[in-house]
Amino acid sequence: MPKLKTKSGVKKRFKLTATGMLKHGVAGKRHRLLHHNGKYIRQNRGTKVLAKADTAAVKAWAPYGLG
Image (cartoon, rainbow, N blue to C red; front, side, top):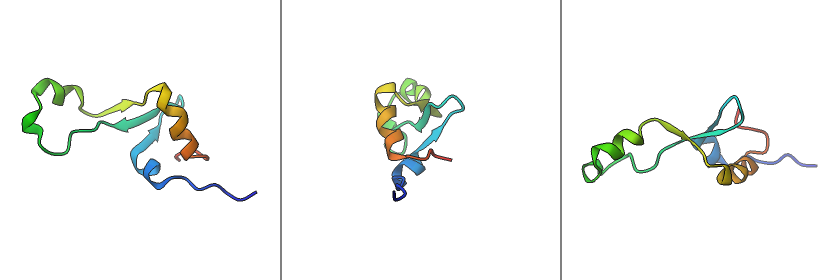
């Protein structure tokens, strides 16, 4: 059986935690930040854990993990 390819976008955008959850950067933090209030900017600092509903789809795009 042939090897499966990992989606290149998934390699760049997600990291696996030690417990198997997926971390991702938060959208909407690149430009035009004057239109967001301070609370929005503070709460979306750093990374977040991906929702369970989306995790299965992303893991299917990375068949051998992200390491």
